[in-house]
Amino acid sequence: MSDFSNRLPRDLYRAAQVQQLDQVAIKDFGIPGFKLMQTAGAACFDTLMEAWPQTRHLLVFCGAGNNAGDGYIIAGLAKEQGIAAEVVQLSPGQNLKGDAATAWQWALEKQVLTLTLSDLIKRQDSIHANTVLVDALFGTGLDREVEGEYASAIEFINQSDSPVLAVDIPSGLSADTGRALGRAVVADITVTFIGLKQGLLTNSGRDYIGQLIYHDLDVPPEIFHSESSPTASAQRIDINYALQFLRPRASSSHKGNHGHVVLIGGDYSYGGAILMAAEAAQRSGAGLVSVITRSAHRPAILARRPELMVMGTEDEGFHPDSMVGLLERADALVLGPGLGRGQWSQQLFQAALAVQSAGDIPLVIDADGLQLLADKGSPNARLKRDNWILTPHPGEASILLGVSSEEIQRDRFESVSRLQKKWGGACLLKGSGSLICTQEEGEQKLFLCSEGNPGMASGGMGDVLSGVIAGLLANEMSLEDSLCCAVCIHGEAADLSAQELGAKGMAASDLFKYIRQLINPSL
Image 1 (cartoon, rainbow, N blue to C red):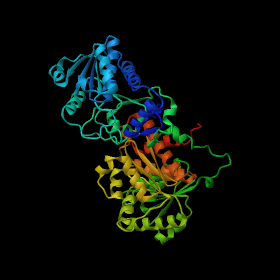
Image 2: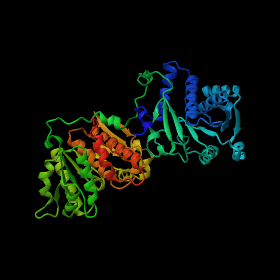
Image 3: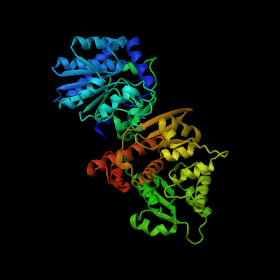
Image 4: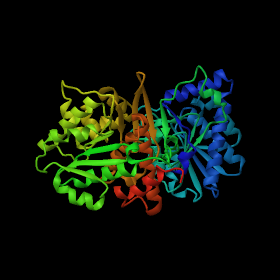
């Protein structure tokens, strides 16, 4: 797990909710807004000096809101420490209001110099070698495309060779969705305050934030739990969250105590997908694992993992109905890895859904299974079940919702909520900052997993995840707990692999040894 995520809070908020928390601190708890601004500026300045102790010059880019006030505080603190500080004003200081205007006046008293963006561009080549750029252009309330001089300022920051610290959020990044609004500052460090913004950790957010540092501005914990405080929009989960659900086996255990996973898939040319999913289920603690696949794949599967049981669909006398007995004995089903979309695939898919429905068996649907599900559920025969887990990436989610992938990514939180509302059960939207949506007593619950790295952008990762989910389901974990734990274990296994050998070149099967370690936390 990344060290930064270990120090982040669990609760995630939308921009409007963070503004509400600010007001609770100011109005209900009597904390002056300017004091909060001073604390934020000090947190940023301390972080900056710790990261870049050789700093001799600050260029602080300030806009027109409270985020600018934080910037003026940072510049004033630098002057107090004998560091040259200049504020690049995108809005004249006299136009600021409230606490931001007070911060501007305070910085002027510290003899902070100000200049315009055009002035800075004219002398661009003379920027000091030990300069740090501070982004205080926009706060969390930005909800429109960045244009004009602000866009030019962001381009200047991104083209600079100097390190960049973003105040609260990189300017141009949506606090709610993690989407760049036309363009956004690429920061080396982001120091965020009060409420952790959900967009920082999903979509393209992690491309912009650099190292993420959270500061609560020393507000009392009660601020987050008062009657006036908003309920967090989502919960951040990681491997530490998952560990609470992982228990050692009883000494008297036998294979029948830990569930039977049956996986269906592996059309011609796709035998590796079902094999990886099956091995992942085994490594995640399933007592028995069976595979229903093309008979041609049996030699390779048994050569790789002789512990697996394989039913071949080209075996003499096989018919989709002949596998019903095996499916009925399952404690968890996986449908989709390498399944394909032809007649063979559709027959197995239909048989599995029928048995799963009749026996109320937990089912994980992934990959081609999601395409077949979308075909089956459209337009009038829409399916919705409480006892399945759907695991689409954005492209598959777009098919399930009948929209473009771009619309899915525009607001990933809204998209995963729509998936769960339409299809039921527990839904995962894969990607950077994978999102999970479940339902409890009629209310949806959202989770964001902060584990994982770009090395996971390789074939077979989803197949492995499906197997991990099923292995946990077979051990009588709930849909929500199985999915949340599996996503965290999967991401942490990839992080451990990347730490050992790097992200590039990571293969899905590289995760198996780490998965086994992680499901045995007592070792």
